[in-house]
Image (tube, rainbow, N blue to C red):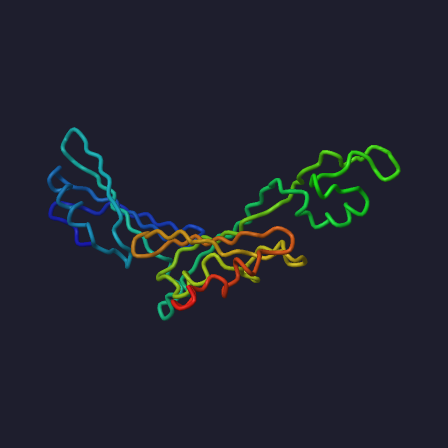
Length: 235
């Protein structure tokens, strides 16, 4: 940024966060209010050190002097030849517990072999076959864990395939440092809609995958072929 007449650059601060977003702040002295206003408006749409201007703030004193802060943002430059390599990454596994019908338990078949199940009432019988009270009588649901795997990163440009396979089953989410909790069972992942926001001349992207219950997401509903639009003649 070329400074306006009557202004002096008095400092600069830079920071890089875990997602790969670099922030640059310049502190600029202006000798008058009008010079500060002109300097702020002149910065709109400008770049500094390849970072895009994203905002300004200012504070004046009794003598009419003003110190303005000009803020710029960009992706961390790791590779000028391949912008896709300019990636910082934050991974999260967000676990939660939910109540599900007892019939959906992976142990339901074994339970009905031990405890009598009334198919008409869709409930466990009050007593066992030998007449003793059933310890599972009245049980209608069970607690099961699920989780959302989340990646947050700052990119120089959006990947071409970021909107591909939205809402479809993914068998191998791109885990980096974290371990897939469904690695040794039959659960699968569902690719959720991403959240994308501009940060200077970069993009901050949040992608999420949701873990299924036991048995995985239903291919008939969430399989990639099931979600394709039918030909007009088949609608």
